[in-house]
Image 1 (cartoon, helix red, strand yellow):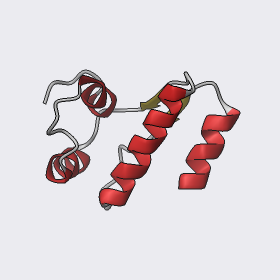
Image 2 (image 1 turned 90 degrees about the horizontal axis):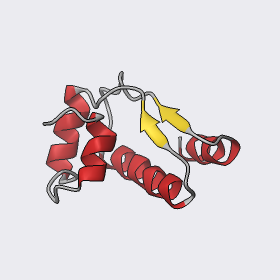
Image 3 (image 1 turned 180 degrees about the horizontal axis):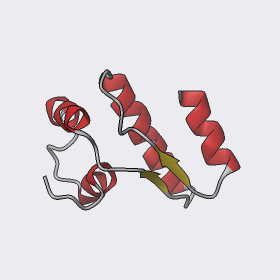
Image 4 (image 1 turned 45 degrees about the horizontal axis):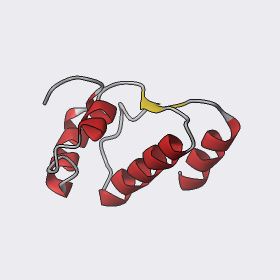
Amino acid sequence: MRTTMLEALQAHDAVELDASQVEDADLSFLQLVEAARKLAAAEGKPLALTAPANPFLAALLERAGFLADGDPSARAFWFKGDVR
């Protein structure tokens, strides 16, 4: 998945990631997506989810502490403006 995401970021001006059906993932998935999000931002390329994080991902984000610092850009990315 890492290679696919990097190739997509190199080949396109904007990338959308469909994580709507993710029901089996761990911390490494979140770390990979967050790293891609930060790389895309540094390169001035939008990276977005096609839909807000589903309940599984929302719970995983919470358990992993990704929402603890209250970073508005992270919340906007994962939840597409849906306040949680």
